[in-house]
Length: 442
Image (cartoon, rainbow, N blue to C red; front, side, top):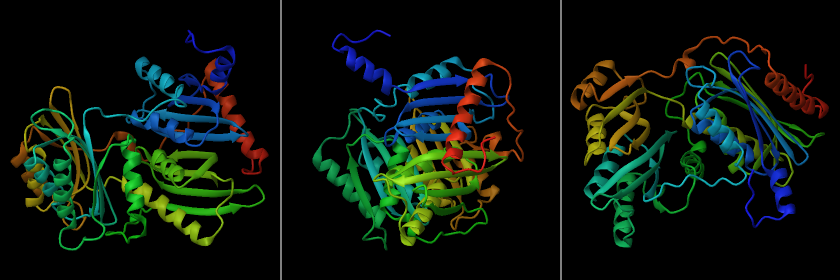
């Protein structure tokens, strides 16, 4: 490694000690790629590591996490969304580089765009009204993410001036956008809780959505529709070791671990040890946590709040409804037209991801239900597709890995890298065993 001229020998030593060491192994396991991170511990580093993996749409099938004093060790078993090991060398190289610099990484910055943050009461047709206002005010939507949960909606929308392509900086226009969108969000009955703001801070989009819904206290509201597959979260205190132990049982889905760790981190808890295992489409995870001040959960009220917040974090991104993918040339008013068609046909958007490519192609994903949250009628879906364009709007299934009813046990295979990572996994489990947190590490 070539060092910058301004670094002295002590600074080089500190850099070596604090830079995470990353190992990626494809030989040690028959059906997943192992990613190991060995690093000095700091608050939020686990979230940063998980974020790197989930931003690449990797599925984390197993995880072992352990902090010993000031040191931090992670082992992740990952696959792509089709359940395959990672074979693309460019992806592997990117993971190594990204994880190796997480101590110094900055949040993703979307240059040249203005970020709009919206929260309020969800209702059918709300998105069509939002996008219609933005189109009328000559704002181009470049990227957006929309989540709904327990009757609430949170959205982060990145826009630019339609004519110039520049970020929106005129204070009068910003005030107009905020006021118009606030009126839309208020509707007839949400005068107090509807919020709009222009954000200049650089924050990971999905983490910011969690923060917005947490601030909106969506976790305190009753669900619109109850299902038999709600996440099960329990909290116990291991007082002799000074930890609170959180157990979570739920259905597996993309980015699940990120959502859990993100919520714990933003609630000012530190994960010291954890395990995660998947079996078929189910996940069991266990976390040993403390407050950032070193104390465990101290009251029944706090315990119930943690349970509600983690359940909400898991449910916000749950894929409710039919997944529709729109791929077409971007044009003025496209989103307003598409979402208006959904509204006119009684479809409610429960989640959306909007993006625009460099060649001005709109790549949009919508999850839709009927007006009261039940599965949408297939005839209505086809009618909407006919209206928008059969070749542009397609019904997409979830990746095959999430339809699997059973999963083969991961058996170690030969190879030096596999042996080294098996050894690290054993070290993590042994640490848990020595602390009295698990009964065995075999």
